[in-house]
Length: 595
Image (cartoon, rainbow, N blue to C red):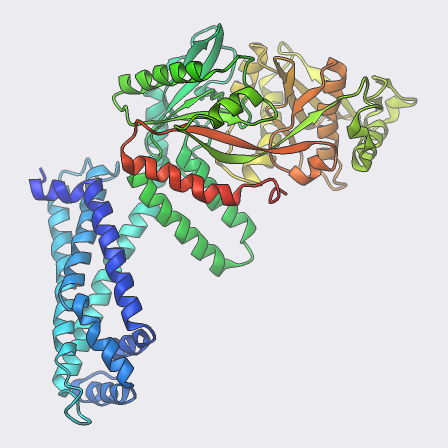
């Protein structure tokens, strides 16, 4: 059992307060020293290069003799905080971080010796701080008015030894804590146990009438609970976030704000800065530190509304008013409270002005709603009487892809008929009915999806399972269209197809990236979606995110998709996380930046 003092240090408030005080104190010292900081670092480590009191003393005095009056002033002034206050402050901060980790981390909280580990760690940390204080006492005793000798060899050597010991002790403590928080390999097994245990314990209230995706249809969408909320006779799914996102490096962004804004950012850094390792490391370290802070502040605690566990979540046609929004939020808050944690942000997924102009306007007018950009999405609208008169046909790239589809598939999209010699085409497009969709075909299809979205981009994309694909096809949530090689029947591309209130969407697409030597499969799969749109007689299609420039060059219109977040009922520190996220993301996710 931990003592009351240890429990106070283990609290999130203590960690936050002490970390803020430590950072402010450290910044003051750095600013006070200025360029003199480099000279102080040489003085603190001179004994490592020149061991022994005599050689250390000679080398240290050579360093000091080169100091200007400004260097001496900066050096003496920085002791106002650094002599006693700063070492005690960072010792308390690291001790607080250590106890917080031992108390809240799933890998440590079942350890029967955690109190002993914490006390041993505290002793080590304060030994490091004591070495710092002893070094500061020695260095502050240097008399800069006594001629060229300044201080004895023993004083200069002792100060350097204490400084080196401080760096070794505190560097080891900081490295160990960082490793445990961010890079501990045992987190992999812990992640799996968290995910599995959460799924086993999850309360799935979606019911047998729900035809859409379920948490069990994916590998990485653990939910504490999932259910349906009936709004104007429409069933809309909601999910409660599960714990453990920070340690789960494959947790999907569809069930976790942390995975969405921190985890996915880390994946993007790895992809776009792969050729610049130093910048990648710096950016990754910064994002990880921000992630640690906001995770400590319960940023991930949330209840998602209209969450189909997909990247794209179409909304049913509902006349949204301010009163209806407030009523829905009240019901969601009651659901969160019944789960044992009322301090959950309420997040409405997939809000954009093109698909839901009334809902978007209503949320924009709400003073309690934060519209935080989630991604850039694309919409296609065949607003003519037929394909030829549609504006998309004015796009040169679109016409090229239509022609490619004629040549490679043998199908005329505009006329909805086979072209001459269609049987000699390389590919064929066909719909696999639910009754004909075998688990073997489903496994092939899911592998194509993984090639495109999981392997190439991020493991935080929803990891669909073959059994999940089959179940949703049987439940008629979507139909499955495939692109086969005509000669041998091998599936090399696919798209799913669903309709929500006359708006179409392809939830999953994929193609054989490795075998696409001619770079034509993705273009053909996209034209499969357009073909379905023409065949259905509908005009609007949600083209999801990604490949934004490619889609715009083929007539799509890009817009920002938002998470609408309600935080007024949360403690101030949780509200501050979401407000900070909005401030940062507003500047990063824009249509102009979308490629």
